[in-house]
Image 1 (tube, rainbow, N blue to C red):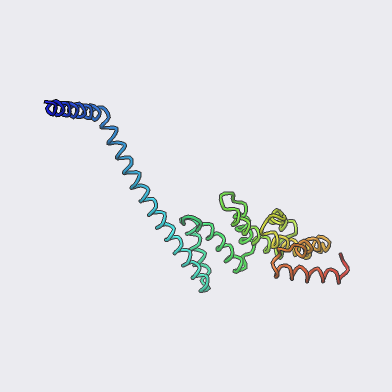
Image 2: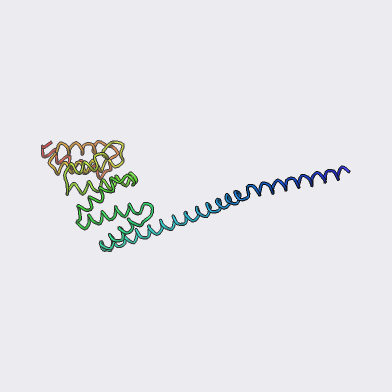
Length: 222
C-alpha cells in the first residue's frame, strides 16, 4: 500500500511539474526562443566579424606589400597610386602605414614640400597612435632641416626632445642641425651637448653630436 501511495504521489508531482512547465512555456516561450536566437545570432556574428577582420587585415597586408614591391621596382607613380587606394580602403594600421610610405616616396621623388606636409599631417592626427605620430614628426623635421627654418623644425619636434621621450635623441639632433644651419651655434651646441651627456643616446647620434661640438669649438663661435 505504501508503494502504491508513493507511486501515486510521484505521478501527481510529475503532472504538476508538467503543468507548471506548460504554463511557463505559454507565458515565456516566445521570450525564451528570442533569447536563444539572439545568442545564436551573436555567436554567428562574432565568428563572422572575426573572419572579416582577419580577411580584411590579410588583404590590406598583401596590398601594402605589393605597393612596397612597386616602390622597390622604381615604379613610384604606381606605388603611390596603390598606397593612396590602401589609405582610403585599407584596414587596421595599414592606411596609416600607407600614408607614411607614400610621404617617403614623395621625398625620394624630390617632392619635398608635399612629403613634409604629409608627414606633418600624420603627426597632428590624434586618431593615430602616438608612436607613429612621433615618427612622422621626426621625418618632417629632418626634411625641414634642409627645406625649412629652425622654427619649423622646432614646431615639429621640440616637444619630443624631453628626457622621458624615447625619440628625444633624434629630435635633439634635428634641432641641433637646424640651429647649426641657421648659424645659431650657441643653440646648436646646447642641443648637441644634451645628446653627448645623455647616456642612453645611440652611438651613431652621439658620435655625430660630438663631431659637430668639436667643429663648433674649433670655430670659436660658441
